[in-house]
Length: 223
Image (cartoon, rainbow, N blue to C red; front, side, top):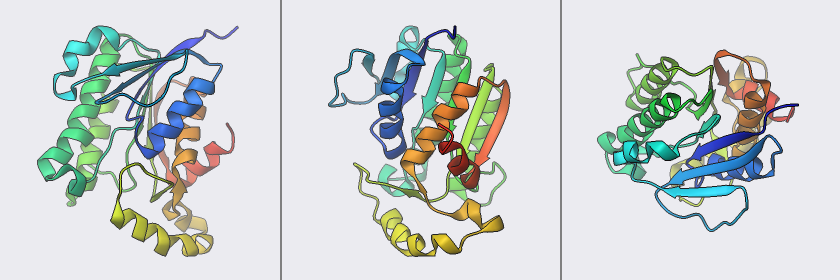
């Protein structure tokens, strides 16, 4: 009989994170779900424990960051963050700090949302930040690290992102034309990214895995 586990999620107020939290609470795999964030979520559930944290001082919360599987959906944009430095803090520093602390507390699997084009050697700041985050997370003492690199994310967001909404309107009608090598560029539903994260965790495979958008879409249908 499979052990019932504890999941920890960061970024549950976002597009992917919101779907992920909903699925975690419905999953028989987990008896407890810990959500860490800057504010309360308008949600009550017998399996859910909410921890309001200051990500700049996350180490103080370390005793409460004990889980088997960690789902990291933290992320912002340079425009929303207000500067490159603030963006780097959220998309790199906060993510790696969460990974370091949960690994030190015995977490075995780390699932993290990155981005298509992530590359620590990229000339583009956004892609370089994501690539550096991926590189740092892979070095930690997890049994499994699953990195998800979705293309343009589709779905209703709490936070307004005008640029992404415009891109979705343009790219949506072109999706059916993206076949073969172009499939990894197809827009993908945030819900499908969340499904693929839970599916990957359920496989309990040791190692480091990186999924492009087309692979994410394929995994989502297996959950």
